[in-house]
Image 1 (spheres, rainbow, N blue to C red):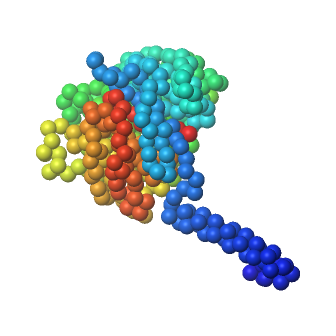
Image 2: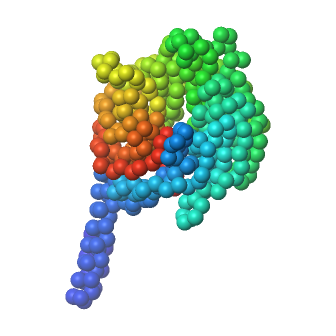
Length: 402
């Protein structure tokens, strides 16, 4: 470099040696940073909180919500400890900008103040509110943290709650019954499962203008217009699932242009084109998560969870019965292809999650009482079991937070 040469000519021998060492160290560090970025590895390791929601069968070992930590550099998951005693804290959600965690709690929802660094109480209860329609299957906040939403499977409904300034649940605003939207409401394709509405998930669009509730019994996604300031929900329309598919959970692509809908009963994923302005979803490709040959060898199979990789290049879904994760690759045209089915090394994967970097996946085995760690190949999306396993009593939800 010209600047370095001119400066070196004016310095003594010892000064020149020191200067060269400085520049050598400087450029060496720069090279390490560039190499780390090119390899997709974080320059600095990060320790994340991992929260486990659990189910509590009679005589079971779970006492509530459990907490562990996860090292994003090594992929090491710490042993899980009880964070808060709770009844049936199945699904969990974090406030988007406050240290508040929400949990389903039987027939309602409960808010907790997060104290992850505390050696005593990592979660402090902030109050509970009943759903108004029975057991809560899933819950989520809107993107601004103004409202909380829950889906009731047995009741077949969506409930809207107002959140207080501190993140606690201020009040239940209204229960929206799905059977009031259509008659008959159940699709009736699969007997005993689709005779009536069964809401299974709830979440909002990336722009926070719409709320979506996949309904297993209706073979539809109920779309609501969301007013978080009211707050209120207004029925906007439906996303049409495949007959007998049994919509369970859904996720948006990172660019917000597609929706991936998990069909619990059919064990498949349907890809929708999403019109953000109109708030409508149009079905396209449906890809099986398991082959008919594999399903024929199991007495029972059903899909449980779906996640989208932060890069948008891969989609993952969990298969209960076969106890595996299906890996799908998304090409540049948006077409989806099944590329791998990986065993979770546990039993009954009710839930799993990807860490925010997209490098790791943790699968919760409800019946094996395990959380198992997999590394994600950045190029192929395929999974490699890291031999990291921790015991967690009957886990059915995995949630990362900082």
